[in-house]
Length: 259
Image (cartoon, rainbow, N blue to C red; front, side, top):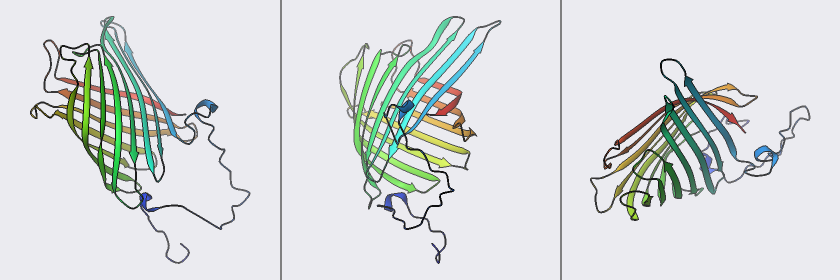
């Protein structure tokens, strides 16, 4: 502001922005977003492709492969998040990881409140779990504890439904869900993202499962939209069938390309 100087306004407090300022013809004009690879699909979404590959040949042969596609969209009324991730690892020609995860989350936002409603779904396929496939659906409420330009903290709780396929117990199971999402833009080139979510069955409160992720990103090239990512991920289930582990911990390094 010409008199008041720089003002900081929470994003969820802004309904619209109007300006009478004349834009100089010397300034570069951003081209309209034509969507994913110019197809018009997911236009005006933030889209990225992630690829990580590690290998070793010698006394032991190892291969670790990680790839993901993420897309996010937000306006004053809603927020979407879509993610597809595939991981594969092998040691001495024997597979040790082989899993596919598909996530979809929709938030309903209110411009005059820090409360939100959300619905999410997740499909999991894992060849090294006690089940072949798992589908989870969740609906509930969230609260934006902190919503600043460089830091956000959102709490969520709701009712979830889980169903396994190809396990000893494929019955539909209702669960209580509690989780936290946090994001921190450390600088123009560094950021941290953390999420953790707990699920517990209503009829067995002492049993639970947890999924936590921590990602650190460093911008390598702004013009090409290339970033480097270090990620930690942990899944824990308090009840595991015979010959399966309770804990599944992953760490990875990858390159992210903005699409």
